[in-house]
Length: 163
Image (tube, rainbow, N blue to C red; front, side, top):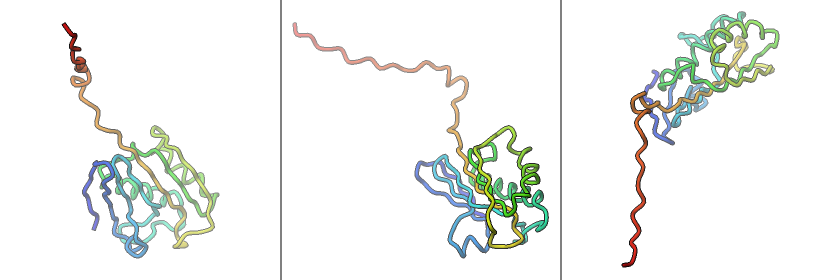
């Protein structure tokens, strides 16, 4: 069962679990928030039933991966627009055009730093890609009125002059 308890205190760790068997077996969290940073673990195209969706379709798997990443971000109070880094691992570099077709529309305006690497394989042979994401949530900006308020200046204490 997913846990939701966003926290923005510096250094405080909040975890999100999607409930897959691997998280408990390996001992990791789907996503972790520490302060304004959200780290999403390597995410695959695991569907709600725990199975890999579309074993022969890199495009559909990429869409599922992105949906899973967004679910983790949202559970920790973040969103796709906050993503600053993607690491994309593919089993076959020939899947690159299909994966780009899925990523492009979602990241065209965000443009995070990204890496794409071909790997020899994944835990499940049906997996075609795995993606890690890192997000940085900006602090809440002051309202326009508060931003216009003049800064208070403190006067230095008057020096006592001998008489």
